[in-house]
Length: 369
Image 1 (cartoon, rainbow, N blue to C red):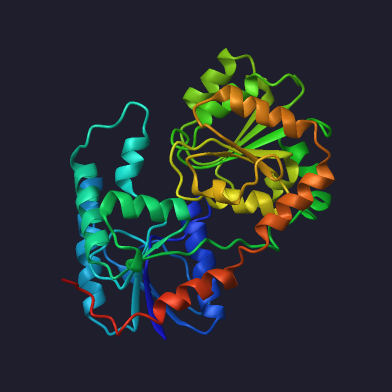
Image 2 (tube, rainbow, N blue to C red):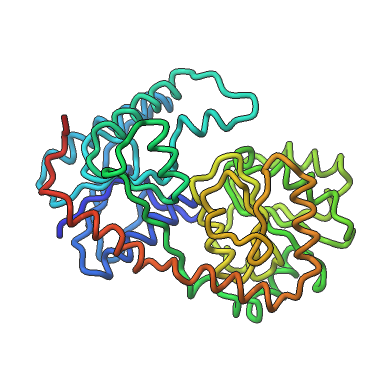
């Protein structure tokens, strides 16, 4: 099958991009003739034919429109068995809603956000995508319900295909290899209870609440590690005000995430809006419990009190209580339960889910009434 995937360049620090990279590699491994249409900056991918989507330097609002229009023209130039888009574009058989709904994201913000030109354009494209694409793929059941409710997409056009995770890269055995040197790099004492936050887009991922919750921990020797891309200055200021600035390591975006899961004891991710979040599966695969937001699709894999906790992402006291409970739990039992819950989420299972959808696609017709 000749498959075209429209996606932004795969980069290490973005969960959406890591998910795309894993899926693409698995599709190639399973025998698909994979082509990727992406703006400039995409590195070569083994077994994949790359097509560059030309985009001139433009303001963000104009760039969204240009991507959609130029992708439409590029798709029409050749024949494909299936066109799958991971972006809000105009011609595709399958749309993977890896970022959920922009409409729901805007509604999730505490004070709301004025719908300026950029947001109006994204919402207009989103409406068209959900109205005209024959097959819509959500990455969690929560996302499926959201799309069905907000956009009236019929159940027959909606499917859930969960992300896969690299079960070899993220593994509890990494502790023996990485824990000591990673902790030394971040100046973390060998026995300190260590909380890890991984995420780019600090406001949406709830870093402010996580810092506040960490500051309330009874263990004053505990440490907090922040990995991700974003402006850390307001969060550093908050940490200093709360008296925990010296106990937080700010590492920025990192490609070696497996080392930091190995260095930590628990992951906290109190996202205001999160369709799923690769971090949930990566942490579980590495044997770490996850304090997850009740608003995140990733909460679907958390069994409260077993492999993590599900909390209100705006309640720092609930997050602190969850961290305290797991600080007192034996590591071995928790690691085993966490790892076991991640093991069904293979890339092979993800490819199988998409294969069922591809089998229902006629040869691509691109534009739909």
